Image (cartoon, one colour):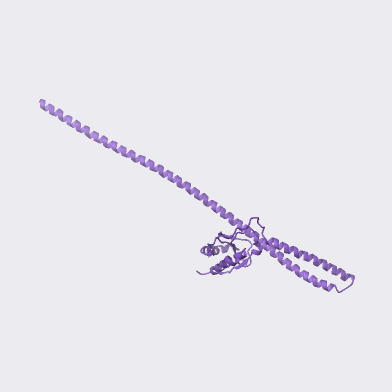
Length: 286
């Protein structure tokens, strides 16, 4: 009986030991799972912080890029507006100069007629004839003064103000071509021409094409304007040939404006202007 009791106690001790071992293993597994879960949570939190920092950095870069783009657009718009105002003022001045030249020509014709009338009035010797002669002579002198004034006005209106700063030298400066259109309907074709001109090289450089400007006063015929005689003979002629190859109509004529603007320091070297008269612009087939 004593041995049976001892075996029973021993068996209970073995069962209790097994139960303790199972409980220890379960506790160890639980602790391992808890530690792994905590590690995963920490890693996820760290990754979320990195992702948030990356998102904020990207947003900052985007804001900087948008601000820079807006500034470039603003500067370009200001440049186009300034060029449009300059072109309008130049066209108005040329119109006034042309009107003054026409008036001077008309008055010169009147002076010629008065010369003939004065010659005819020299014949009579009566007092009336002498009075007529004096009147004609005075009118002739007055008209000659008006012709001189109109000629001076024409020159002043045609010539732009001379800048104190000298014009930049042409060395190292790329040729620049502004395009002026007379009608908004010309813009799509002018833009297509501008795209083709981007592949054209004049001399040693590609063309700079700052933009297309709609003007209120356009010439009666299309023209390519150059502003320095030596540039007209070199770049100007090469650019005129390139335009003739790209345009079916019109064919802009090369016009040397150096007599009017050659002394102006405000016009950069290798500056050219393509002016389209009203009407359709047709590109040549590729």
